[in-house]
Image 1: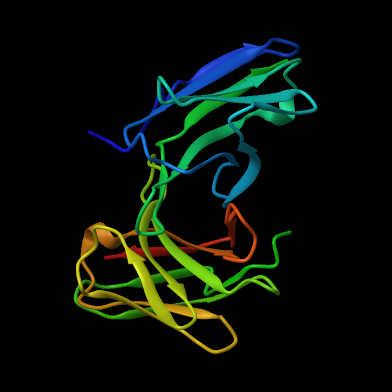
Image 2 (image 1 turned 60 degrees about the horizontal axis):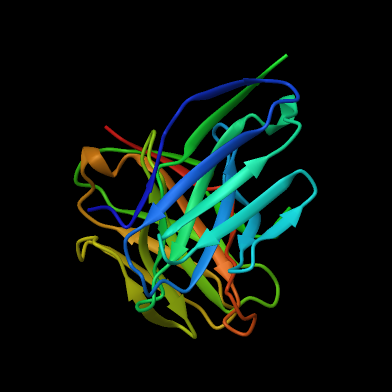
Length: 110
Length: 114
């Protein structure tokens, strides 16, 4: 079983739509959680950390459900510039290893 | 920009050769992690260096090795290259003094093994 699983998509949504991505993780002792964004042929860039209480940054909201071991990312009022691959990242409880999902592809259509 | 740099940007090698990739971490960061990202996949953890010592390793064979220098820059060495080693190699710098240890990535080195 993979440490982190994501629906690869693709998600094709119109501008202004709300879109949600989910990600599940296998290790209940995992400590830290993140969403990264990766544009085509570029490096991943930190979008936001995910806290137990949930957190919001503008149009982006991240939530963590430890009981069900999943993380979500909600994007409101989608912009063309939101088109990218969104990577769910989990830091395990040992070994300093960060586990990445395969990414979810989002295309926002005019 | 993250301030993390990598060199070279692109590299072509043949099977059996050896390669060295380099990474300079962001100012103030003492930890460097290396990842391999194959096409269509998420990055896979190779190993992490902290204070010049390996500080965690993923499921990669010993022909993947590394170094960290006193200025916290790092090298990834791959011996006996195989076709499947073709990938984007990313380094990420972070600081173990910064709580949740957020990682910031360099632009990567694209390696093609023929």
